[in-house]
Structures are given as C-alpha cells and as structure tokens.
Image (cartoon, rainbow, N blue to C red; front, side, top):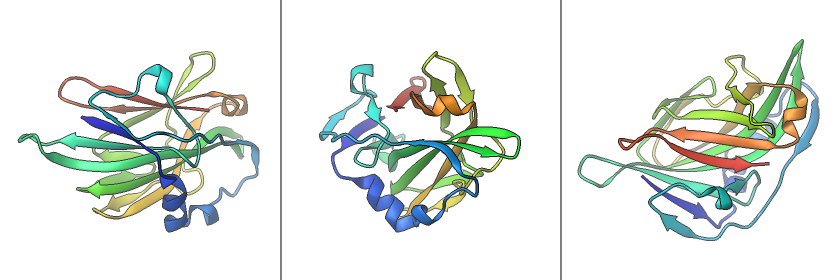
Length: 188
C-alpha cells in the first residue's frame, strides 16, 4: 500500500464540487473547529509516522492506493478530513467529521457513512485515549452511494460522543492490507 501527502488544497476542491457547504446538519453545532497546515509532497510505502500525522483542515489530504495481485494499482483515492464539530440531535450528542473522497482509479462504495467496499474502519480517539466507533444514526449528509473513477463525494462521518471530544483528538482510519492493517491519523 502506498501513501502520499498532497500539497494541493484538495479538500476545498472536493467540497466545492460536491456542494458540501450546503449540506449542513439540521441542528446547531455546539462548537466548530478547523485547523489548516500546508503539507509537502512525499511518498513512502508506510503510513505517516506519528510525528507527521496530518491535521484536520482544508489544505491537507492523503492519497492512498491499493496494489492488485500483479503489483499494479487496483484502487487509488484521495482522502481529506476537513472539519470537526459537536452536534446535538434530540437527546443524542455527536462529534461529526466532514470528509471528502476523490476516486482516482477503481470505484468505492459507501453505505450510510460507512465504507462498504473497500472496507475501511474510521475511529475517533479523544485526548484521553478513549475510542469511539461510528454511529449508525444518520447525522447531516452521510457518505452514501458508489463513487466511480474520476468522481468525488463529500459528507459526514458521525460518532456518538460528548461535545467536549470535538475540542481535541484524532480521527483514525484503519486500512486492511495483506500484511495487516495500516492506521492513518488526522489530529485536531
């Protein structure tokens, strides 16, 4: 599996193309945080080390590619985590991430905010190390549908968590591979 940090503001392009700015949640956010940092172009065969964890923000994205059996690229996509906010809907509290995905090669399928193919696992880890799994309750505009090669999608991934978790933490994405799972991190 290969990773490259993208230096272009891919997230802004994805969100503009998908109209995510109009896809706000129906509830008023309790807090909203976004951080930006310029990422430099780099390639490696391993995920970023903890010292080079990506920030949540509009100016950084990660390119990810999966090899096929012959060593070529089976699927390639660019992924950005652009914003985190606390949202209350009814009696439930959520921490919601806005993400953008651009499929460069192959196709990806999402169902209700979850990756169906390939099966990637997002996790929220708060500042105290407590892990939260994705919520099955829809919040805002969830990632949903099949994204063909050359297309983009933007939407929300929600975690049922207290609003204070939106202040600082890590969005972790687990990517399965034949050698074992790789973990990618975006901090806020």
